[in-house]
Every structure is written in structure tokens, then in C-alpha cells.
Image 1: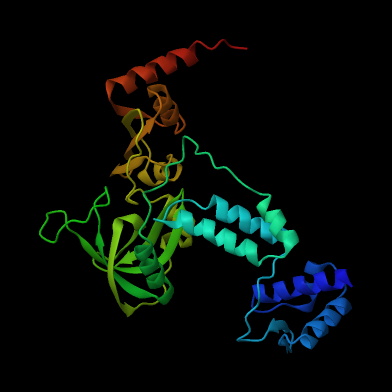
Image 2: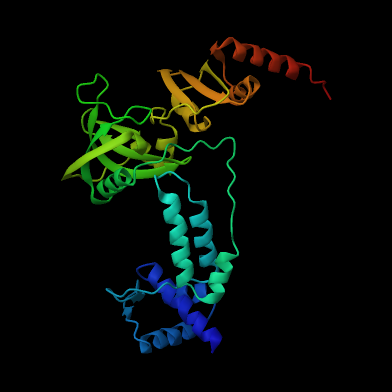
Length: 328
């Protein structure tokens, strides 16, 4: 009886997780026969849950509209929630306390066994040297951008300075844009908006923490990002509005590689500048000059115009050290 009740709860959770399930898929997920699934569906109907049968070759079962499920999680889902809420990046102002309260609220709604499992998973996060999260974003700005993406509304926004300050309209660096916001992307602990700029008729990748949304206007239709690959477009865009991370040592070099290639593989907290079709400048930092030299070497490209002199000396020392490695 306990096994049947547990399986029925899992079935109800599955029905609430997506619009429609086939009988075969439900049986496979629950690891039981299709006959057993039908019996459990009847049990749920007797308990008052509106399970609808969809006829036809693409038919199946769905939970009736307008029905709100209670919190129904299995053991693995409970652990997933505990991990997600405790490891959520601090990329939005003031959400640390909110995630802690959310975790406590979810735990209180759990059965005793699942609550114990979640409470036993207490995590301590340690920051890696190569983690460069962007400055936290104003929740109101993130909500405005997300709403514009969801409802496909043109977003009228001001563009903030690299340090996050807002220029006055009379300032020389004041800029505003009318954007079709198509995708909201999180990459390397940074929030990006992939948008079509109506002013210059080009696709752009904007850092959300560099936007000050004003309002939205008319609706817009679907557009495909260049190349049709959203991830590749974001990672290969060199003008994403990224800024240099603070490091003890900072240097730059001219690489014989296109900016789109370097932008995809450059470490977080670096800046890529387009020079021409075959060259770009990479500015980056590390805990030592040898560290910067080592990162530049990973691109396996011709280097010129290195700055400052300390970086040039580090590259020469590294080359000498490698040249002295004995042959086997």
C-alpha cells in the first residue's frame, strides 16, 4: 500500500511537470506496466484530481486546467532544490536572503523524510580565483527586461557606463536604444540580453547590468540570431560590454586571430577589442605576469604589441624555460 501511494504521488508530480504524457512514457518513468499506470490514474481520479484522457495517435494523459498541485517532490527533486538554492549565484541585488528564506519555506512544506534529507545537505561555497561574477543587477531592471522578452515588446532603455553609473541626458556619453529583446542568457555568472537594435539594424549582446530600462512599446515578431546558434552567437560576440576584472597584474597583446574566436575562449573578466578581420587585442589579468603569458600561449597565435614591459619579460622567461626542457 505504501509503495502504491508513493507511486501515485510520483505520477501526480509527473503530470504536473509538463502538459501531456503518453501512457508508454509514464510507464517507463515509473518503471511499471501500462496496466499499473492506468490503475494509478483511476486512483488519482477517485481522489478528485481531474486527469484528462487525450484520444488519438498523439494522445495520452494530462492534468486538468485550473488545478493547482501541492508541493510534490521525490527524494532526488528535494536534493536538487536544496543544491540549487544554496548554489544560486549572487548576480541580483538582495537575493541572498531571499534564497535562504525560499529554502526554509520549501523545507517546511516537505514531508518529514524529505525535509531531513534537505536539511542534511548544508553547503559551503568557496570562490575560485577564476570566478568573475558581474556586479549584482537591480531586480526591477531584470524583471523589466525579462518581461519584455516574454511578451515580445520593444524595450526602450538607457545604456549605463561600464562602472554602472547612469549618464545624464546632457552628458556626452549618454546613449539610449530601442531594442527587440529576444533572449535572456546567463553565461559565466553574467546576465546578457540578446537583442536586435532597431536604431542601427544589427544584433547586439548587452550586459543586463549595463541597462536602465525605461518602458516598452509595440510588439515584434520572431527573428533568428545570426547563424541560428544562440550559444555560439553570445560566446563569440566580442562587444558584449564586458569589463576587466581586478587583478594584481594586467596586460594586453595583439593576437593574429579574429575577435570572435578569442572572445569565445578568453577567460572571464577579460576584454576583447576588434582590430580588423584577422586581428584583435586581448586585455586580461592574472595573479602574476607569467600567468598572463601562459594564458596568451593557449591561443597558439602570433603575438605583437605586448604591454607592459613586465609582460614582455615574463613571455621571454617562459619561452626560455620551456626551451630548456630536456628531450626524452
